[in-house]
Image 1 (cartoon, helix red, strand yellow):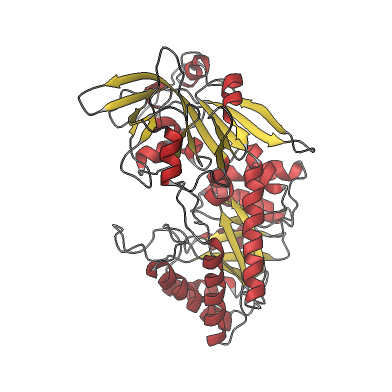
Image 2: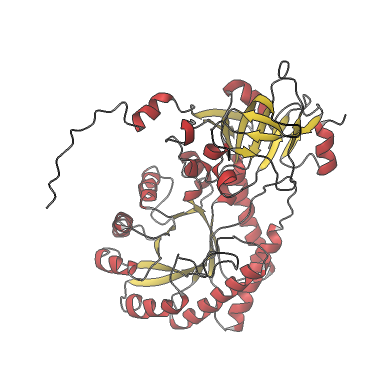
Length: 479
């Protein structure tokens, strides 16, 4: 009977740059042996391989440099990290080692920005692009920081009235740079025609001419472009980018100080061992198209900003589980039950059908079988049984009495903790997993650091009110 390693080598070109196996038929992730980490920390376990974050930042910058040189593009490129992908301090610390800039989306991002400044991780000249629909607290933070001298903090207008708050409350900054997010059309299969986010095309001229231009301290610096499907080589993407660039050219002619565009995030990450996305070719084509449209309209090319989130941090993450039970529910359906939950710990796999690279951590020399993976919750939707490249899922056949079987989901570093409610209350009270950081010391040796223990019952009891003294209820008189 064929071994699992035979199946993989017949299906893919294996080993890859990122995955391989050691002499014990156990998996290597970025040359990191996973079994020793599991033996030290146990499962369920999330790990973050920090050098991957720097690798992706360096790769993106290199590819934009290549494209700019290839086309003799006269604008500059600036890399921003989209904080909502992962707000963890270890992620920001690693990313900021590379001199990047930031994009925020919530009032609660702003205390993080202040803390990073106090620690010397960013300066008041770091670009902070403030996106999102802004409630009063977010507006107050932005105004306060602009008045405090954060010279490159750029509020990105999401609605027509937002600018009024800055006009009224930002009174100490010598100059305020403003961006406008333009509402793009959604994909043809989307239930809405136009994005709810941003300002529609027909209103952009009006908000500039009536509210920004008359105030000499305010400068329209940037137009912002983003589509939910991300940067893909599709007719839809190129159509929306072209429409946006023609609007930029139109605005540039009435607003000479406009000199930048933010083309958002959405650079894809690898979700299968089979992955053929040509990053360099895509970036080349973006630069070429922007330059062609600007030349056609006789305007200078803009400086380009991106705000890569998943691309920055996604491939640094892995989630490891142990198979704790084997169940056969009928003649055909074979279940491996894991010591965690897809709904709570990998919510994208449940909520939007996101696929990740799934590989066994050990036992690659054993025969394989088709399986379904089942999570711990009582919800029938807590399962995983297909891959991005296949409708079937295969894992080694192991003897429960002799072997332990561990499995890994890879490139899980973006959004899963925030969507799952890290450290909070989750479905069936499944705890947040233990989290380990994997890095390298100055000599290149691998290091591990326990970031967080598995969530315990006591923290849940406090959140649920069983360990707090409740204030006496106050009577409310209703007229």
